[in-house]
Image (cartoon, rainbow, N blue to C red; front, side, top):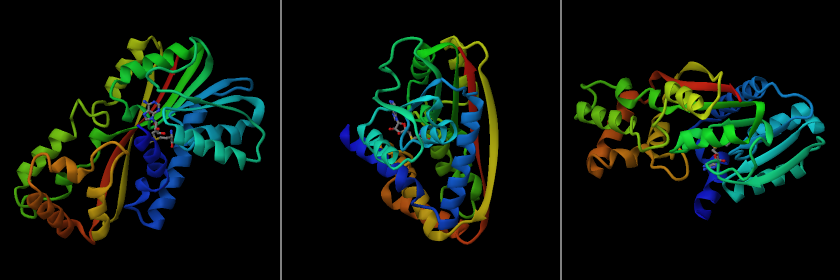
Length: 288
Ligand SMILES: C[S@@+](CC[C@H](N)C(=O)[O-])C[C@H]1O[C@@H](n2cnc3c(N)ncnc32)[C@H](O)[C@@H]1O
């Protein structure tokens, strides 16, 4: 477990940016800050609120709240993994803004807080890593006070543009077989990254007891020139510390020689070309 724990901090600070140019990294930060502000604004935070950032990682949401509300609110940094909380503690020491912050090491499937204990619960890209999303949402419902709000952002990975949509059978040997493999692993119900969509989350909210679950679906196309070396990194970068890379996923269906050839052909087909990829995301807002 401690390996995964260590890797989450690494993933958040390095791995997730490994395939990106400086410009793309800057664009990603701008995007993260913009969606952070939406999650915070949808939480409708008031002075005096007790707020938990569940799966806080390096504290994107929690520090955003401190920046906006200073010590007018109480904020709990919560994560399953100690290294994330240690990272946030270090950052908090450098933070000049007065705050009422505390730390809670806790699995979101078993949050170490009593029922009805917080006014607001926030998550950003946490449910996507949890296999049993219903259980996590039940826990969030349990710890919220009556009238409390859950606000979140999640990427819907299964709706992302797939490699086969960017290439054609003339460019790729066994294109159809690679398409089928990709469609299979991108809809795997035993993989937390792909076992959900906007409808299933709406159902989870309803089942947990939220009466007014609202899901705002956004489809964000992004157009850029695909660089050959970035394409290799698409295949070799892990979507999270404990999950396989795209290359490893293809290796479950084909031998290494075939997968390496596939990656080479995708590189040839897309390298230097302008491509448009789409990623679907959701903002969740619900009241207990
Ligand atoms: C993609 S990161 C998001 C971090 C942060 N919320 C942000 O917006 O940058 C996912 C976070 O979920 C945490 N996490 C993963 N599984 C968890 C679990 N079962 N319970 C609580 N946190 C978990 C990880 O440690 C990591 O910090």
